[in-house]
Length: 319
View 1 (tube, one colour):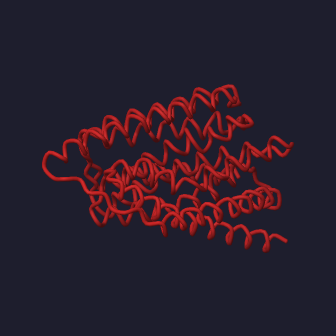
View 2 (view 1 turned 90 degrees about the vertical axis):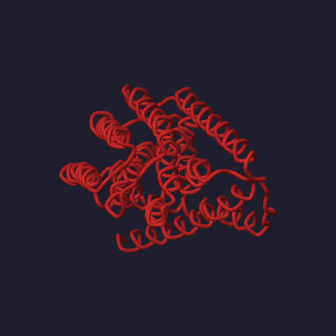
View 3 (view 1 turned 135 degrees about the vertical axis):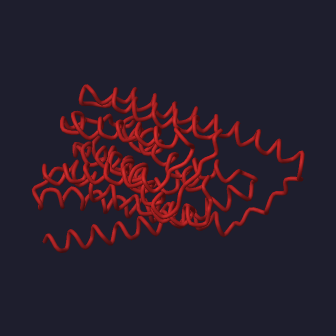
């Protein structure tokens, strides 16, 4: 029974990764065909694409919660785990491979938004619940974030037009078809992963929040890991860091909040007392490292990796 549950869980994750890769690739090509900058694509299109598993899991969980099967712990755990992986673990790995340098003009903006998102998550969860109104308010915050990014993207291309004429590539309808197929695959596979994740927690005798943080959180973050490492090695720093920062904001302000706006979430006391504060603390550390010199070297990457390993070790002790 346990073996079959684990096998189906892993196969479901494989299809989630496959679908996320299809969605991200197609969406990026379509966005760039319409003249969007690499940084904008990374923080919006790619971030939404690679975070689509989290978004789908949240919406699926919210629908199940409405019919009496509460999935709050596993959904919120997934949002925390994915955010820790993207902004701490993956940033550390990318920094160990190659010193990451950031554009000074983007550091303050990205840092401010990710800190506001993490702080809001912490404040809203203090009463062990995230209401529909709080979920909607975080979605509104994300809309403002995308609006600001869109404005910056527009201004960048206005400047570029002075030097060169912007030409649009024809939209590839094959990419549109791939996008639709990817969405269909990810919706169904996410339903399977969520169901088997709950079963796995029951069979192993661990909390659903732990399954969400450790298993789902790491599993759904693999697309970001691959994209970040590839982009860092190729020198595409805007796409790499834009995806990770944007992905963290999407996890909190879209994935988790979209589900909250549908059903509301009950937050496990352990998450309120430890996991969410640790996430906020980690976000602040990353921002301080990046903001101090507009780069992340190997020494700072090692410290971030240590921060992540301490977190996972403490979770393992409390299983």
